[in-house]
Image 1 (cartoon, rainbow, N blue to C red):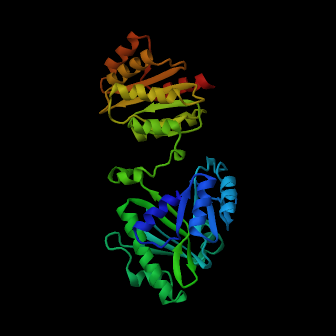
Image 2: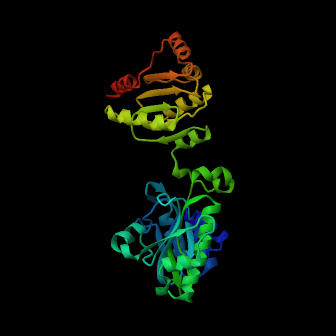
Image 3: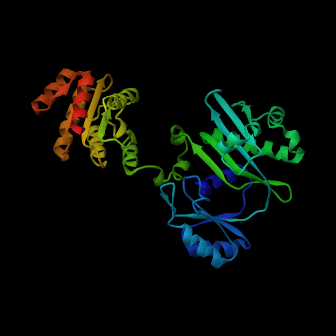
Amino acid sequence: MEYQSRELLIQYGVPVPEAEVADSPEAASAIQARLGGMVVVKAQVLAGGRGKAGGVRIARTPEEAATVAGRILGLEIGGQRVRKVLVTRAVKSVKEYYLSVLVDRNAKGIEAVFSDKGGITIEEAAAGHPGRIRHVGIDPFLGPDGTSFLAGIDAGELGPEIARSLLEITRSLFRLCVEKDCSLVELNPLSLVEGGKLVALDAKIVVDDNGLPMHPELLAFRNPDEYGGDEIEAREAGLSYVGLDGNIGCMVNGAGLSMATMDLIKYYGAAPANFLDIGGSSNPEKVVKAFSILLGKPGVKAILINIFGGITRCDDVANGILKAKSMIEIGVPIVIRLIGTNDVKAKEILQGAGIEAYNDLGEAIKRVVAYVA
């Protein structure tokens, strides 16, 4: 969220206006009294369009701050309920810029993106003013080179003081991006205020989840509103899971096979309820947990289990299925496809419990689709 991004910007020396977070009208009133003068009260949600949704308002007195905070708190913006507001000192902007540092997958490197059309989304700027978007490659080991960066953003139009400030801020964003494993660090607007100083009035930071194990300090920033309850439960259980809108629950081993399974479900006229990769581990407890997550998702009418045994042992998965059936009231049809390591033994285990398992994936998917048709 914006207030969390501010904390990181401050750590890396990027100028931001004075601000505090409030979770009640009374707290917002007290913050305005401490800051004095005009403040901006801003909804804290992981969504764009906050201003258009009524989530950004001006206040000039403690009473006014309490009133507007009361209106913003509890709003729903982008499907998320506002639980906190940022009360920030208002600044008079002379000019607004856009500046970001991001991972450029096409170039297999890092780049800075700059525009003198700040304050609107970069997509709008690109559509309306494509010539005002500047892309500058950055050496991932050395960081922004002053000469190439200033030439790339056409610094001659900005003046030497602003250009130098932009270079220093870009270097700070680059360090933040690399050291915290970010895929995007964006300032919009980066505002030129009276006195010639550049100040970041809003920020968006995206952290690569794969880097989080190296940054436990960032885990505290994780917001439950980003994820459904099933996704949180799956992550805590060590399962790769993404909730979707279909009605066939999927339990598969391997990301590629999971994707192929979902494609085939769509091909045969139905829709998957999720992506769920139990991984290479064949621990029966993972299977039990996966069942629990799938059955807890509203709208699931059938479950497809698709295991291609390599590292994963089919017999362990079979035992996990039986354990789940003994612990959980499943209540929906289950279709199983098992092939690979110990698949004969797995089928014997399942047949002993009166459960059929398929060899052919197409047959299994046609069967599960028939259950939800």
